Length: 317
Image 1 (cartoon, rainbow, N blue to C red):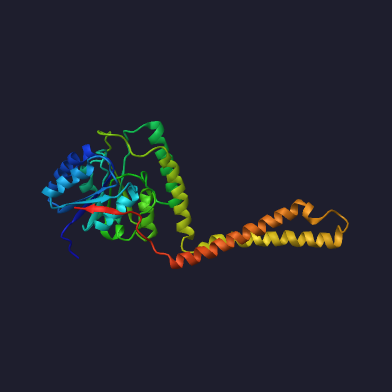
Image 2 (tube, rainbow, N blue to C red; image 1 turned 30 degrees about the vertical axis):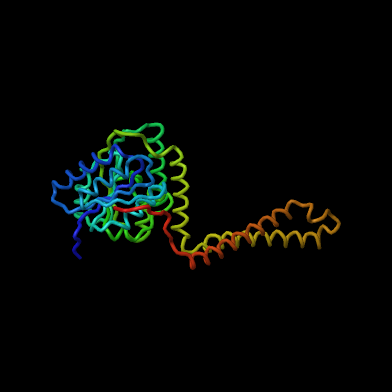
């Protein structure tokens, strides 16, 4: 199948008015060197500065630029999801708008993707120009945990510059804060040919980072969620039902033991409700019942629910 546009570049942004024009010029020059047909999709994730005006002005003089503006800040994952839906190129690249990632890296990454028949290739910011204490060390810890949990040997899951085949990004739903785990989501959908390439990282030129220290805690929580969804997302009863059954079994075993002991061995001893084993049995049976019901409800919800959009577009150009 032939595509009129070979490459779509998706750029999510929030309050990056100083960076938009120089980024586009840098990107345009880098891609024009290789005579590649391309489009650029800017997603304004609820900016409160002049970012959208900058995008509109670019769209007026460049027919290969598209702009999407959200009604408010929904987050990077939702911005990427909107960009992926809009992208029409045979290949799709993502790029952060803060000028810390070099557009010059896109073509070499695209070439590697084609040569090695990969589904996606992720950048690796091996040398970073960020705070060692607040960004580098937490990032290394986060990436180590992501590698162990997912089994995907990437060094930098959260690198903003990645290149995908179109069918990869059209098959995944990026929601919550799952943009960090797009390679994991892709692998879960059967796209397991994942590569990595070292990319150059620049110090931020304008403004400040939009992510606080809490992003690492959110990242770990999302990792746990992703692990659980991958293991049990299609069969929640396999997790909740299993543990619920164990709890109910042990609870009934304790109850049976207390009943036999009271009826035949300690008939004159204190009441069953005064023994700690009674409360252990009661707690196990209550928790077991709740786990079992949670698994059952999860199965019902899974069969009746559909993924819905988690953002509202204000306007497009």
